[in-house]
Amino acid sequence: MIEQTVAFDFAETGSGPALLFLPGSFGTGAGWKAVIGHLGDRYRMVTTSLLGYGATPDIRPDGNATMVQQVDLIDRIIDRMGASPHVVGHSYGGLAAIVHALTGRHRPASLVLVEANPLGLLRASSDAVHYGMFTSMTDRYFADFARGDAEAARHVIDFYGGPGTFDSMPPKVRSYIVATTAVNLRDWSSGTPFEPNQEILRSIDVPTTLVRGGNSHPAMRRIAELLHVSIPLAQLVAIEGGSHFLPSSHPAEIAALIRQHVERGPGIK
Image 1 (spheres, rainbow, N blue to C red):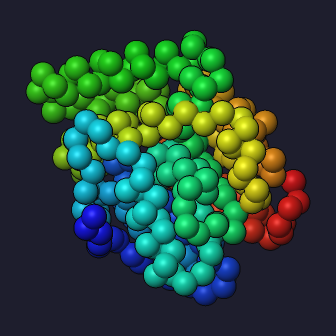
Image 2 (cartoon, helix red, strand yellow):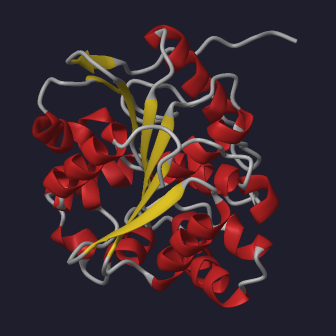
């Protein structure tokens, strides 16, 4: 077997306790800029881009991508950091953080999961109603992309943020979403088969802060509830007035939660 070494985005600022920020789909490390601005320089903060975004190449095959490559990427980033960080993940980055905490080589110091989307948890919990909300959206999304709709990703953006969210985004952001839609399809094909039950999630034994928007999609609220009752050292916080894209819509609140999370210490719920 030939090991494939992957280059990756890596930017670092500040000093102190180590934080690793994992962006969601359609995002790069730059998506954490506002949050980091509110944190000041009291932490060592590393940003990156997941596979296929920014300058991080995508090595996943179409159709049968898995989370193995994403977990390996996170381990390589932590290798470069040389320290076990508090991992902060948004959306698909939160899903990747969960899978890494379960299967990665490096144990994170703790987790902050902002609107993490392990939708397979719904299926593992026999929640067909909320799981079906995802699949009805992705069925339309995948079909529209297959027939050549360049803006098919509006389905997923509006699912998370509400009707009109895609159209309200700046043209530069919409253009990047369109350009990376094929990458996002690999995110779905790799993340959807991850179906952890509560017993598996109980093995995550690090302090965990779960963050959801007060106006989040019902399926995302249900995922947050299931994670809360499954991860032993988890606390759940809702940011009123927010939905899915909290790092950009509520950066000050996210930064405050990160500070509180890091300062409350290990094992305190």
